[in-house]
Length: 211
Length: 91
Image (tube, rainbow over all chains, first blue to last red; front, side, top):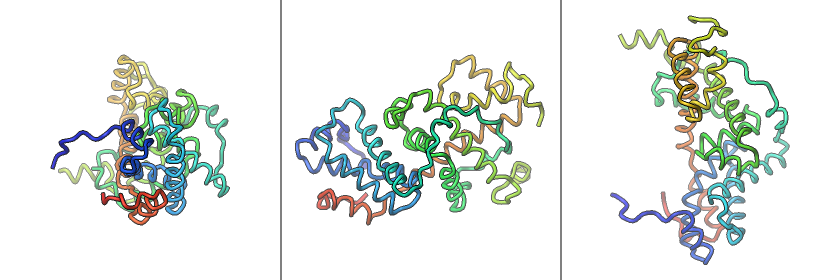
């Protein structure tokens, strides 16, 4: 089955929603609910809190829809609200350890230590439950200021400019934090995927397998 | 390991390559620097592995995130609190 009608743009939906069109409101929610939830659960790390963030985000957005002027993309605004909700919740729970200043002035990360190449393993073979748990734990180990940049840029696919608008920081800071986050996650996963762990075939085993 | 970390390959050492992995991934560097990184990575087994696993790490996170979805119950509660429950559609 193919869509013969183009989906309405965010701008069109917002305009309709502002004039009271409930179908447009529902379409906005449906379009973004999974993305907001995904950002929330990676930030607050548990389902009930992520669901609270999801609700509070959409309640806030619907309440303030009339004040949205379209100076930034709707998605950028929505993610800003969601990020703020998640940060407020973390602060309330006493789980926000902010050391933003140090992050941006720290020396460059050291050279990568783990240099096994596990990348040739098919993604499907890497993505089992234990790996996903390890990936979540690696994200959770990131300082908040790196985690939110990584989630917005690499997981949600926002541009550096949009991410800067969401977080209120400069593009050089976004780039620096993103790079640190990626290096740290790579290092953590490389440690996890070490052949000695016996979870996946190491390089020598792969060679034997292919013979 | 076929070279020392401070050895220059294509005018770059391993630290230079590591520093530019994100810029390379994001296509945010001049072509000439791209080419130098590629030459270094092709000749350095450690950087080759780091380069590949760096890209793979990002790919894995993107892939994993695709599977994260809000539960039906939470969706229903969300649409209810927004007074849109009568318009709730199944995905």
